[in-house]
Image: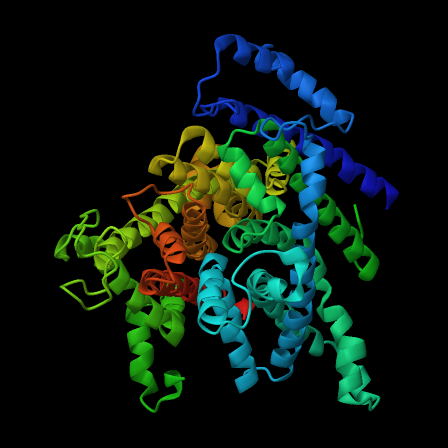
Length: 307
Length: 298
């Protein structure tokens, strides 16, 4: 187990390195600079500014300096927000994204698993078909369609919920963004659960449990469900990636002060260090979650051997 | 089931004349899938509309008309209404559909070529080469790709060719995994051995015997990649990084519709409906094909 973790971490390092390298050189290849503005800076001032951020050195040197900084946990200063470091910006804005993401995944798991189990227990029945229809719609309707439509219908026309804004994370402000983020995940999770459940219900140990005369409810809840939701564990990593992509849209539409909104703006403004910092954080997050998922899987399913 | 008919002799005779290939069987199963057949019909209509539609509309997609802004559907010859610049929504929608479908197909083709070449080589050559090639795929898999596509758009500006390449380059990973797995099972089959014994080199075996036999799963995955690509492009356009105005794609139409939805909800609703319809068709066809080609997975 420890050796497995060690090996996975050893692969994670070159991966992160690759991420940093690619992002660094792509960002620098972009035309424009963070110090462009409507007023042209005097050449002397521009030279000063560049020198302050070490950007007058050759690109290779800057790259090495940056890597050295990252290794020490220093992501550098923001180039657009004077007097703020990248870490400051990440710290100030991660909470919104985290709260959104966690709520969405919690709701998606709860609803998705329940729907999946319901569908599996009535395979090929009306409930099953209804759930599968919802699942297909959930996969086919992108977040940037559901979000504006829900805002138009529920927030604007009916006036039940606020159309946008964070309002310190008030429940009313959370409902729509979280719903939009959760819907595609509900679709996928209910499909996975249904498939897992149908397979498990056919297995021998479930037949044994039935033969013992256990009530069906107990069989489903205690015996089948545990095995049926195993595939969900390995979906953790992809789910996280999906949520991150979704949050870019959701934070833009609902005008939420999260990291996703920051990323696109920073990329367009050529705030090199902020963009790099975010790419690193997200890549590390996905790598970690993938590892956690694989470990969890091995712990939960003794048939799996980590090699 | 018809084999049990009373005139069994005639059946057998006819069967002897024309055999039933695996592909005939698959086609039969596909045709029995109502959702897939309906989707194929709808998709055919959508494709025809996208190809010829933009030439048939009375207005051009970029024709600005300052007197006719925010027209509701079915007024002044604008079947689906007009936008903030008085441009005809129908014309823009058909053009957008054309652009989205084109991007879907070209980018999928890019991912198909890279994925099949990569996966077939790794699977067939095997050993250390396989290990190294698949490790690269693993590493790329764990990258936050959407960020790289965004960076790419920011770096090189949003031109359409780049969108093709960027999205295609992202989507080949799964394709290469599928192809590799399939190749591993194929390469020990007798006909491959026979080809090798007949003196065909590695490249020849891959190109002539492995790749053609990969067709089934690859076709399925292609139909599922097209909607993924359309979605990715729309996502970029929605963030303002994809297709640039006055050009339109389904995503850019939805984005501009979303910002004007209070005033003109039709600008949001029509593009959204077309988008969802298109994605659904591809998904149903993909699912249908999978069930038809590989019925074990049902």
